[in-house]
Every structure is written in structure tokens, then in C-alpha cells.
Length: 329
Ligand SMILES: NC(=O)c1ccc[n+]([C@@H]2O[C@H](COP(=O)([O-])OP(=O)(O)OC[C@H]3O[C@@H](n4cnc5c(N)ncnc54)[C@H](OP(=O)(O)O)[C@@H]3O)[C@@H](O)[C@H]2O)c1
Image (cartoon, rainbow, N blue to C red; front, side, top):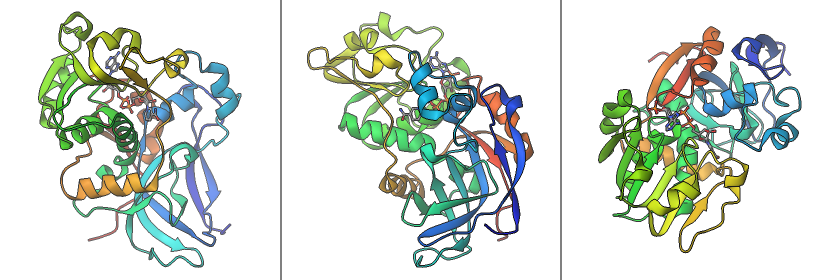
């Protein structure tokens, strides 16, 4: 540990945004194979808000507390993703140089609501595409990693028809674009205020969720991606074609074990956190094939306000928190 200190937001116990506390901690020193990143921007994701409040899908109460901590998160510094600048590298690190602009994903290891974060040099760490600003770069990973993983598991094919429930969120905006990029026809279901927003992201067809009940319509899909737990496999499967897939990104405990119905199946579980997926997302973003939707931005001192916003469950794209100034030039 160095003698320099940094500010971090901690969540000492479960509760509302008011439980979050700003603390000083020593800036960590990178060891062999590690990189120290000065964070320019991070996000408050739906996972951060869930973890802070211990609001887990139905059936996960006790399991969740056993996994994450009984009275508060075991890792009290939340935050799954960052953009920033390499501040120092540990012994043996040749791939990164101080000053490099990067994107990092810590996923379940969290720790990005801080001014600095250590990351493994060969982990989920990529060069920031120059066409993304630091705010956009901070929001690439959380929704993108989940969307990419579930679409791979679904083996999405060109020409398939996809319905995205919760298409305006961090996962939904990434999923609808990645599905379109793979040549699928995408229907996005959102609230009225988000219809133009998802249309601009490339949705082929948009539906207002207040006035449309897809389970009452005759239409069927190859894939129904439920990014928010809006429905269940039991309700969705009659609206899937043969060999259709229901993507249960926010499944409750019974939903984790939903059995196939004929040739139709439900895919659930935690998304993988593969470094190569972050590299793929960065490649797509650099090529202009994937945009990061930044809904609202907050200053570092306003991180509890960002949590309050995310906890509404109605955020648009990503809620980005500016941590420090980007490098000049
Ligand atoms: N399985 C995994 O590994 C994994 C990974 C990442 C995330 N997740 C989960 O995925 C979920 C979505 O994450 P996110 O970050 O995209 O969430 P988010 O950004 O908070 O998005 C929520 C969006 O859903 C819409 N919405 C809210 N309530 C709805 C409802 N009842 N029916 C339909 N749409 C509704 C809202 O848009 P409108 O106002 O337009 O409706 C909002 O924009 C979270 O539960 C998260 O925990 C799972």
C-alpha cells in the first residue's frame, strides 16, 4: 500500500442510498501482473443498486445473503465497470503503459466506485476505442457482457425474430443492437417515453409496454429476451416458434430451473465474465456497430443520487458517474 490516499464509496450495510459512505483509503500498489487504473468514469448498474439494497429476484433472499454477505456486501466497494487511465503497472507487465486509456470490467469482484482500481493485466481490460468518450466507455461492459453472453448461448441466427423486453435499459440497449448486428429482426418493448430512443438504436419495430400485451397477440418469435423479469417462461413459451429460446436475464429462483417445453427452452443464470467478450465489445464499439447509451450522468459526490435513480428500475441505458478529469488532449 502507498501513502497516497483515494476516495471510495462504501456500502457498509444493506439499505437505501443513504447508507453509502465516502471514505479515504490508501491507493493500492500494483503487484506482478497487475495494473493500477486511475478511474475517470464508472457506472451505477442495476446490479449495484440490487446489491446495495439486497433486492434480489424472488427466492434468492437467503442464498443471496449467503453469497454476498448477511448484513452488508462482503465487498463493500461496489461498481462493476470503469474507464480510466493506466496510472502504474506492476513488475512483468509489458502489455500496458502508464497513460493508456482503458476500459475495465470487474463484474462480481466490484470495486469500481473508487478513484483507483487494480486490475489483472491479462483480465477484462481493453484499450478505450478513441471514438468513445470516457462516459460512454464506462458503460460498455455491464450490459454488453450480459447481452453478448446470452445471445451466444441462444445461438442467434440471421433472420431470426427477437422480442426484447426492457429494451431501454443497460442490458436491453446492448442486446437489441447486438441482435440487429447479427442480422436478427428486433422488436423492442419499452414505455412510451423510450419508443424513439430504442428506434434510434436500431429497433426494427417498437411496442409501448403500457398498451401492448405480447401474450395476448398471435405473433411468435425465435427469441424472447426478458432483460427485467417482466414475464416468465411459462407465459412466454406459447409465443415462441419451435426451437425458440426465452432469455431469462433476471430470472427468479423457479425461473432458474424452468424445464424445456417441447423444443422451446429457457436460458438463465449469471452471464460469463470472459475477457475476450470485452475485447469483442470494444471492437464492435470502435467500428461503430455498438453504441453505449448514456442516460444520465452524475458527479462522484452524487453517487448516492445515482443509486436512487437506478433503484427506480426505470433508468435509460447507463447511469454514468464522473470520478476524475479525463487526460488533457
Ligand atoms: N444474468 C446476468 O448475469 C445479468 C447480468 C446483468 C444484468 N442482469 C439483470 O438484468 C436486469 C436488467 O438490467 P439493466 O441494467 O438493463 O436494468 P435497467 O438499466 O435498470 O433497465 C430497466 C429497464 O427496464 C424497463 N422496465 C422496468 N420495469 C419494467 C417492466 N415491468 N416490464 C418491462 N420493462 C420494464 C425500463 O424501461 P421502460 O421505462 O421503457 O419500461 C428500464 O429502462 C437486472 O435485473 C439485472 O440484475 C443479469
